[in-house]
Amino acid sequence: MATSFATASTVVGLGSSLSKTACLSSDFVKPVMVRSPLRQAQASRGKFTCMSFQSDWLRRDLNVIGFGLIGWLVPSSVPAIDGKSLTGLFFDSIGTELAHFPTPPALTSQFWLWLICWHLGLFITLTFGQIGFKGRTDKYF
Image (cartoon, rainbow, N blue to C red; front, side):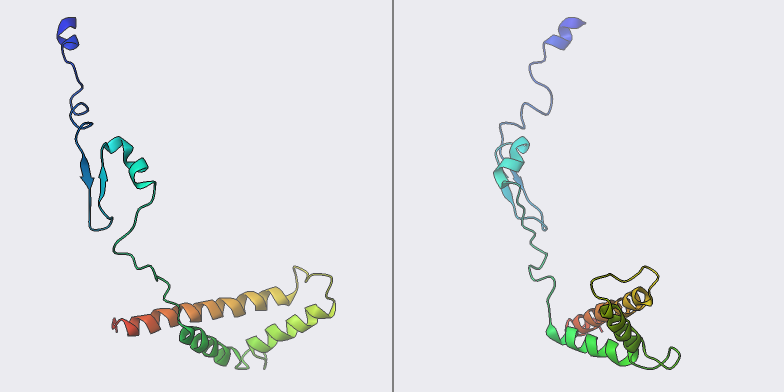
C-alpha cells in the first residue's frame, strides 16, 4: 500500500497549472496576463483598474451646494422655537461662546444642541439635494 502512494510524481492540479499561462479577465477588472496564478500580485503590482466604476464618482456640482445651502437656510430661519429660528439660536450661541473665547463651551451649553441640529439638517438637505439633482440629470425621475 505504501508503494502505491509513492508512485505518483506530481500532485493533481498543481503540476500542470504552474507551467501554463493564465489570462484572468472579467467585465469588472482589466485582463492581466500572468505566468503563474501564484504570482498574480507581482504581475499587476497590486493595482487593479475597475472598468465600470467612473473615475469622477463624486461629480461635484456647485449648484447643489448653493441650492442646498439656500434650501436649508430658508426653513431653518423660520421662527418656530419660542419665536426664534434655529439659525438665529445657533448664531446667538456662537456669539455667547465667543464672548469668553479662550475657554471652550461647557458640555451643558445649548451651543452643542444647536450646532448638531443645524449641521445635521444641512447635511441631510445637501445629501437629498445631490441625490435629486443627479437623479434628474441622469433621468432617473
